[in-house]
Length: 306
Image (cartoon, rainbow, N blue to C red; front, side, top):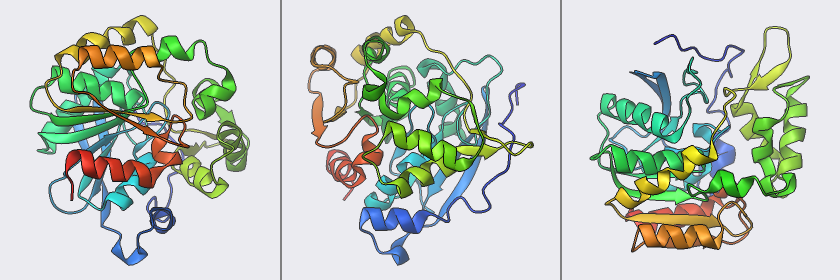
C-alpha cells in the first residue's frame, strides 16, 4: 500500500444502519432504499475506498470536502435515486492515509482517477464539495475522459485566501479540522459539531459524527481523517485548471456561506464562460448537509438524471 495506512480504531458494526433516517430526510420511502456496499481500489497513493450505490454502472461520482467522508452525500443520493459512487478521498473515511501527507487537490485527483480506472468508471458527471470541488477541478482538467460534467459546491481556488479573513462562526464546522484531535466521548464530538452548525438537527449531526469518528484502543475518540495542511498559493494555481476544463460546469453556492465571494464568481465566469451558477438559500458551506433535497433537485436537472 505504498507505505500508507488506515486510521486504526473500532469500526461501526453496520455503517448503513442509519440510511432509513436519510430516507426520512430525503422524503423517500424506506422500502425504496437501494443496495449500498463498500468497495476498494489500490492506487499509487494507497487504497481508496468508496460507497457503491446500486448494482449497475454509476451515473454520478461524488467527492466530499476536507475532514468529511463519502457518507456526507447519503441523503442527497437517497433523494436522487440513481446509481452512484461516493468516494472517500485519500486520508479520509476508510481510505488509506498517505505517508507524505499530500492531500492536495492535484494529488487527490490522480488517486481518484486511478481508482475510477480500476472500477471501470469514466465519462460521468462529478460533484465535489470544498476540497472535493477543487479535486474535481483538477480531475476534469488533468485527466481527460474521467469527467463529462462537473458541479463544484461552495468553493473556488481562492477559498483559503478568503477563509483566512473569516471568523470561527463564519467557518462553521470547518473549524473542527484545526480543533482537538481527540475527545473523551462520542457525544463530546457531537457537541463540537453542534457548536459549528447550530442550525442543523442534532440527529443529523450525530449521524455524521458517527460516520466520521473512530474509537481508540484506550477508549477515547478521534476523527477518521488525517491531519493536513494546505497552501493558499498552491490552491490559487488551480485557477489555471479552471481555464482548461472543457466540459459543462456549475458552481453551487450556499446562500448563508462566505466561502465564495463575488470576486471569485467573476473570476470563475471569466475563466469558464457559460458557467451555471446556483445559490441554495438557507445553506451554509456544506450544502449537501443543510439542504440535501434542494441540491439533489439541482443535480438532477443539471445532469439530466431523470
